[in-house]
Image 1 (spheres, rainbow, N blue to C red):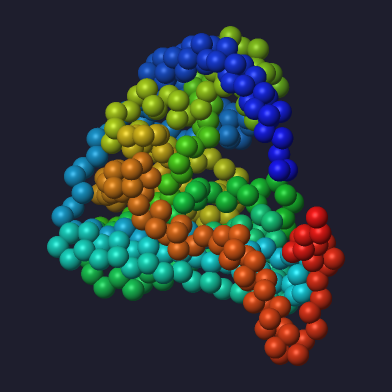
Image 2: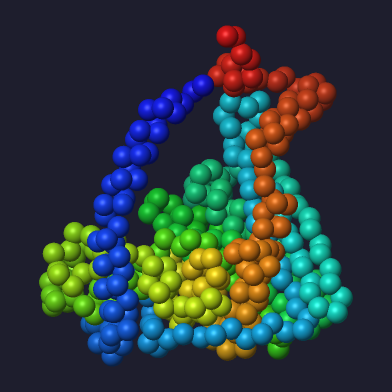
Length: 403
């Protein structure tokens, strides 16, 4: 046994005791945040946001209506369609016989109403050619290997791209929403020093191009595109509450307040240790959603080609979920209401999580045995074609047990 469970259990018990001791303070902070939400001064917030001119307050959302607003869901239409995609991948492994990676995108297209139907499938794609393993800038000869966060972004592009293909094949006016898991803001590429040509290919020529294709197709249709985030760890709205409650002048608050969190802020009115979902759990009843907020992010401003990203929080009965949409969805009230009602319906069918996303995940997942079989298949084909099969001794040692 590799893990000493007896030693670990003692540490877990100590952790739980510590959490219980801090629970009372956490409840107090959530209550303070809830009061601040209801007392939120929208006019003051807008003035502060304008005056800050891109300082600390860029981390807070765009707020156009009072954040304590609550909206009930419409009843789902009699006939509707929910299409979801999710992805998984096998990264380049330097211990393998050949450099390659694989992206597997799962799709579920569920039709409800008079003619119910379910289409489930996956699309695996292997990338092994030299030009497939890097992103290149022809003018300068610079290259970026596709691995880590870049591979994650390429997978996100593939997920939205396949939804665009599905949208193009829709031959009816059935009300439809298209869903992905996770955020529509490609924050994984931020802060890693990637060159602009990498961001252009992945975001502008990939992610946004596919989203805009869906947008163009959705005109004059009952249609929506969104992402669903389960157990969101965001604090955008909490940060907005701190902006209006801060006792320091704007010119001083940028120096006194922590840019990433407010846990070290000496201001007594500061709300720390609270997430957005904590507040909206108190505010929203099952099925209800919050007002719509706008994402303020340099990556959206610089690379989303004028397409804004918005979000709302929704009580799906078992948790507070975060739903993100392109601005062209939230700007259309009928599309916004459709996304709201169908996500609530999907979560009811999926016992707390959109059933279409669950099915897409099942199609996409690449398990441990799949990865092992993939490696073996690569080596078998190399051997069959007469190519030498090289692997590292480390990789070989993992397949053999000596004791």
